[in-house]
Image (cartoon, one colour):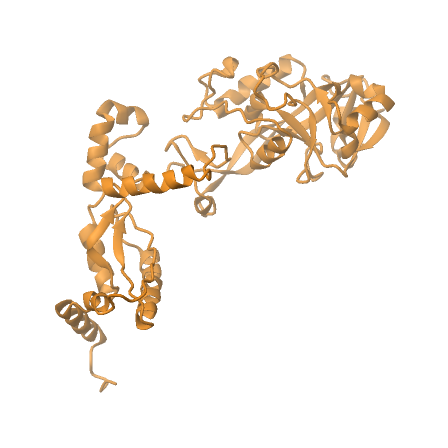
Length: 424
């Protein structure tokens, strides 16, 4: 109770001063020797910037739980730590040094750059201690750790080895948004930020995939036997990312969607005039111009019936690769995520650049091939576009596909596309 004239800030400072003089936090640990410990993991912050509202808000929660457990009789050590690794430390150092790209870091020397990062990363450690103390949080700063401490890194390596020895570690791929400017993936949290997507214009293509046969043991063997005209047809697939076509490994259809085999009229798109094409029945009208005025439906199939059809890919970089699982690439697969909302109802699969693509191809035994380096440029696996930034390569990919007679439709779309909120 107060008389209404007391200053709460003054009272807070008096309590903080008493706790400091009495070493109350240390006493709460010492007088519980032998008691059961409650371990509270407190994610360490970066100390190369001042705390913001989010740090302060979560700080109160991080203080309430250990205090409650202490009141319940537990011994609750609370060692404060600093995250001194990762992109924030590097970006802050690059900003201070005026560095714009990886080449300048290499020119400076990795050892010198790391040393500068180590010196600058704890720049605001003192201010952090003041803020946290002013919050009335009880934490142990004196025995705090830094993730760049050798002892800490050794403990992480030790823990990893325990997992490895138990057979719990495997190496694989996962598709994530990636910034070639920062040489790092973006976390799921970062992709949900308001400024992580921007509107941009990109080319869209509808491409032909000429059928060559049926993969053994699939429904398409029977389908092709009953409809030999399929062997002369082309599946049509639509993409908003032409730069992924050199990495193409499969096509996907929805197993229950109805697909039609259409004989294209002579006044249809030049690439398919007079030929037969396969696309979703619900999207036939969307391609009325490309199919021509007198287009004729020759047959209907469910997606399940065409699963297993093989075809000629748009590029032959991996046609003879022996490391594509059971060599079952370049065939039509079933995938429940395929829709008939847009496109052709047949989806091009580049497992290195799409999570759904990777899951679908992995389930079919088709391995992932990564054709783009850390700078966002094609590697020597794609010799025609080697060294080109993927978006810059779009125009050359389109040029080559047009020359090969593989493009049925070429348009431009404005869509929301992920960007790094740091580098844009």
